[in-house]
Length: 301
Image (cartoon, rainbow, N blue to C red; front, side):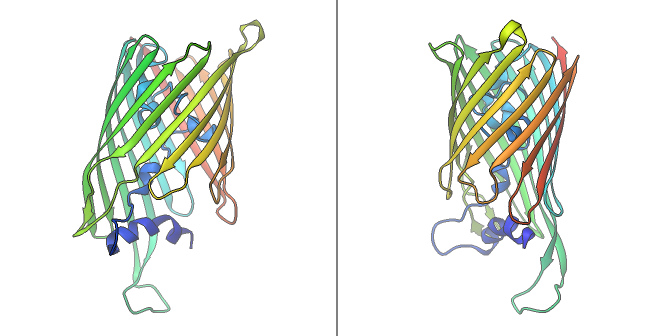
């Protein structure tokens, strides 16, 4: 049942539709990073690390100048996994980034039109997305654009194409208040064999506020976001990140509008040129928990 729920959208694409093209490649809606997961996905106005390539490419110009490498792994439900790698270069007002994500589902039962007690075997499905982005800052305003060639394969059929993301961030006249918005997965309708499907167009907008802690011991960042994806209802996210001067970050989040998700937690530890991140996303029913891990590396220019 778990496998069926997660790949049903892909199966619909292969089967076709008499009406509007169904939405496929829903793995493009899955956050491949770790920081945003720990904050309940309230990250579009916050994005200031290499994972901004997914959430809001405008945020790539934030943070320290130099080179960053982010490697992330997600251990999902039975035989569901995601890998993510991003390298970015920040030179102050400009930033470049390149990344690749891979989502894999294994152990899907193979059956034909005539039902049988035992499956005829099993097969897998995977999606690969390559992202190339450029971002620039003009004073308090930041903008970023990403091109995303993708390839998807379900058993013996495949689809490919190119999508695009556009993101904006701005520091408002209110001190420590930032707003941000992004539109993701813009592109034409690809197809499996002859059956076309729509990409999961995603609209996100939110705000973040930084509260300095006493004695320059760090800051508390709180954020809120609304997200609307094609064929889905609007969803609301609330997150927080307690960033201590010691290099430790404690993250928490809550989500409304999801059937199986609500709370999320995360922790990150930065030491010198590297950081270690972890996020826990509990799922209701019998789905269990999702565990995310990431390693980050920074090198000055």
